[in-house]
Image (cartoon, rainbow, N blue to C red; front, top):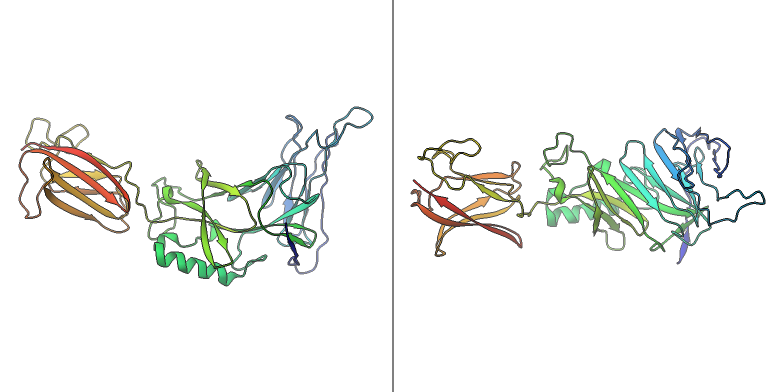
Length: 360
């Protein structure tokens, strides 16, 4: 892999760096501080060790018993795992070629796990900026801004950047930066906020539905964002493979999902013995028929059983509450006749159909 020279940003005052080396054995683990960060490490040797956390980062290193032979007393040995702070800003987390390990910010914004033989470096550091627009490592901030303008122009404001969901990550060996893809991909997870569990990412306007969120990586060759396939989720976290250094972001898009759309009440019988707006009741004339879990754009179409269009309802772009009511009238404003009808919801290339029954 080609690698180029790279000078890390130094913090004012050139504070002395602190390093923590961890080995399998009886020696206790200690957290060390410096440069505004307190960092810890932990050893995992078939179940032993404990995590030490503090400051902005929690880091875990693993001992591979097959990496080094036992010593002459029969004790298993492993390589070292260190955190270097103070002299480096942002801090650098050091890994060893044959060992796996992970980094997690203590606010759980980001988790990064790398396998053994991640890159062809005997020892390497992972350096991360949480604000690459104002505190870049390598990326030129204008490229991030230009790429975001492009994606907003094509996808709308649902794809704008949110400051807590943007990170820059690089792998370095002293002053040499790894370029290109990694030998074995790691796993990058970034979290999002939806404290009220309404299905929209907190603080977004227009609302970004969490089921549209993806990890994206910046392609600096043409200043565009490239979608990374999601490989996991849950716990308000988006995960994808970490296959190359660079700038990563969580961004959303306008929702075109139709798979969860339902219509109720069915049958619609506003004058029957079970009429009413409640669960299990057959509706009211004023309430009409509700379509729920709609996409954020598209159309609802109502057809007769023989395929004649009765009514077309546009879904307002950016629909915040994903439901819309049909007043059970045709395009002329007249009540439709009793009978069976077909509904179709379409958005982009997606569509879903179902049946309705109207009984007056």
